Image 1: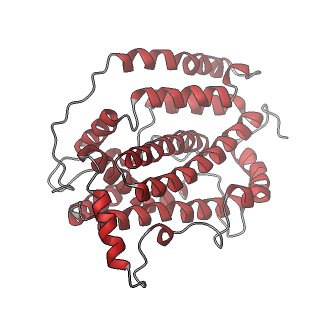
Image 2: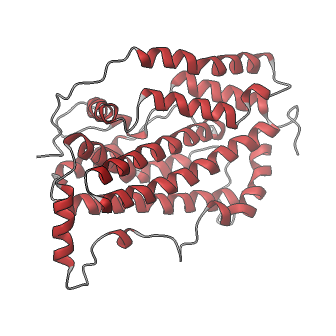
Image 3: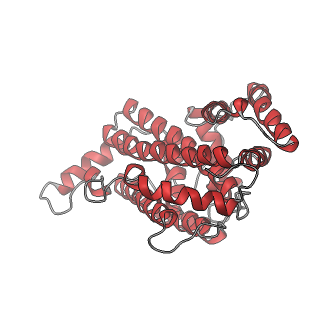
Length: 326
């Protein structure tokens, strides 16, 4: 174990690389037995393909306007995967030779995440309820425009972000699945449930990375945590836009729909922070620098401040028509 007094980011990440490589088969599922998008959709090789598509379309008619809008926004977020992998490769001190544990994780995580957008995209296409060209334009915009998550090139900040974001996407997909079941679309419910399961597992891995860093470099990790919370964790689709709509405005309407449905709310944001404070044992950290002590005080006090703000926020009204939905 590297002691906090001598640890540098490079040393900590190099130490963790061995741990990651040893546990990669626990963190990722085998490709051979993992689920694939085709497992949840009509098989075009079968004679009953068109009958199955007809049933899928009939079930999709029961989805509310807001629910469909949130599902589309979630899909666009998942489809922007090339940006997310490129972002990982910009992080400092992650050796990316082929056999390195960090490289294995990045490739494996990307490969698992790639199935999410593929599956949801095909479902939306078959549902007959989505203007796919407008949807595809938004996806291309999101990849083309890029994003800034506020992590710079720092893995410590990046792992705070991914811990938070994977927990948030787990909540969002799981609740969309629950609403889909209530609306009579059991197939979509299963789809969202499988994706949520991946997000939950990925969240546990990223949280483990942060736990390990706190063991070796608690002050710097605490400062990174505080910095990300001051900036606020935003979805990578923050710059989502439709054709002819200014960057960021579409995302605002998307989050309004999510708030109305209760798919992902300001209270969920705060609950995730509470969970991370507990799981990372923030209040029990010892031997912090004075700056890190102040950072901890800020983070520990933050949930109550956020709750007060959330309690005053009105539920957004339905007043926007997305170009994705005719």
